[in-house]
Image (cartoon, rainbow, N blue to C red; front, side, top):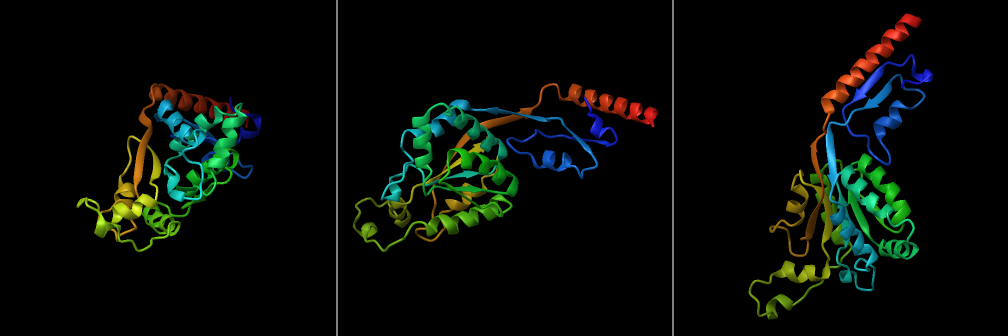
Length: 257
């Protein structure tokens, strides 16, 4: 129902799922200075792989991401998010721990010295809310990169700077001819965990794991599909219903003026 305070504001229909916990469009159009009344109509449905998300959460609560004197003891050295839906799914499974103080403490401790890479200010803002609550010692990077290609380049520079590459003779003494310099270097640099949807570009893992990178710059990436996207059932009916409703509201407004 349209509120009285919005009676003179024309509607604007946004064909998108309202993001949680924050949506920039909602914040903008609900601002007192806005001249429009927003209505969200989801076009796509997002189905989360809850068990996969819980297995990622288990990495934190089981101690596999706890910091140690040796950074390479961690199963993963950081996380990557490029989708607000992936952030939303991750936040949902973390919220399941709200009544488990022991798990929450381990979760928070595991966030020490943990870089989290994200692309774009919108995804970064959604991620910040979750990080502040559950991973308070983690740091968010890459919000200003704008796209996957730029983020990948940023990660190469930033993540590699966290690990000192030293000269080693291991490659000259190993008996395994398939072990190269990158294999030796990256024993001391844990991979990154990338939470993705089933539809995504491969620019980030392709850039970070490019075999042509100089020795020591290669960054391993493990992708985990945590949600799938489909067409929202009943979209046509919802769209028609909103159009008819708004037309009726506008007719009533005109009759009252």
